[in-house]
Figure 1 (tube, one colour):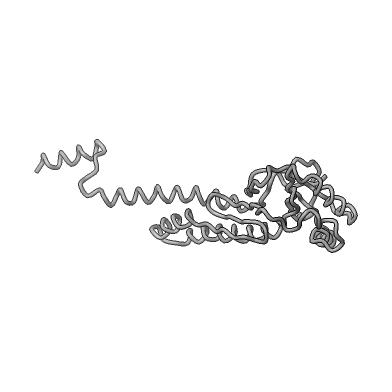
Figure 2 (cartoon, rainbow, N blue to C red):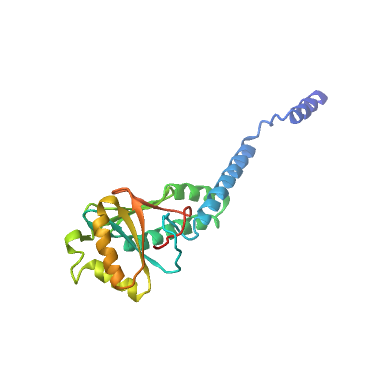
Length: 220
């Protein structure tokens, strides 16, 4: 009996777990999972701040922006897609927040579901994708308004710029290099309405990614 107690004491001193250690390992594994989840949630909640994209322009403005993408074929309406993207991203963040109100085991399962959560939609001529990897918009091949219609008196672009003037908003353009002539047309229309224009040079057809990094959008 004394030898048995001595072995048990020696095992404990040397860090060897007793035979019924499965429950302890489960608890430790869940604690590690919770710590990992807390780190992930911290990043997710931090990303709930104002969403930004980079711009090379220098002058700040407090105005709201209406987003367009301009290429050789014409102009794409990014604003409607951005509005929908923000709604979907809020759904993603709210899902992570709900995980915090669950019990330990439910919380781990909830985190696994949210890691695989994703939504893809088409808004007009723009594809919207939101997942745990981030949020992005990608213009489709056909523009919202084609180049030859931009300068018409009843064009969609003119109506959009009229809306910007009425709401005292600015225009922010994702500008593909092939779309410079179309950009000049849009900027001329904006100038007629005293609407400020900002822009960002963009790779043709590349997605627009959103996140908490980068600088706020500015105007010329």
